[in-house]
Picture 1 (tube, rainbow, N blue to C red):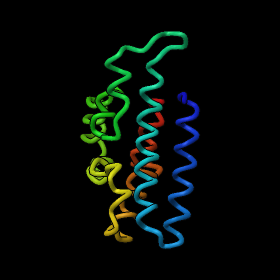
Picture 2 (picture 1 turned 30 degrees about the vertical axis):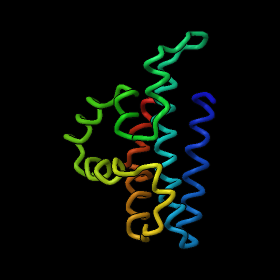
Picture 3 (picture 1 turned 60 degrees about the horizontal axis):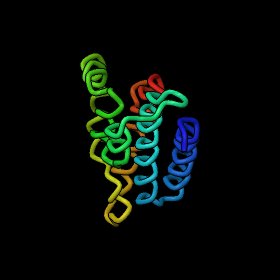
Picture 4 (picture 1 turned 180 degrees about the vertical axis):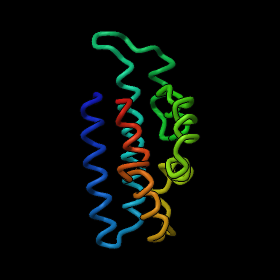
Length: 138
């Protein structure tokens, strides 16, 4: 899997999440939009590896996680996120919603419409969404 595959997966998972929201399947929608965000972070990390370079063991190991806050650090974006949060309150609120997603949400049968819609909007908002911000770094 490479950076371009990850970018493509982001679009696919966002579209799937939207379709699930529209059909009132909130559990899957929540999981997939979070997974799209995970792929976006991993695309940012993949950009750090130059063609034909062997990635450092630390970078390779740190990339194999589903924890968004850890992927943020591995992508080298912690300071940039902090700066963005200071200049854009809506973005800061969106990150507060998005950072709590975990891959174990696929087992959560209690996800309601509001939670799924909030995460979807936090990730996909064109102005202050997490995905719009991440795309500037991949």
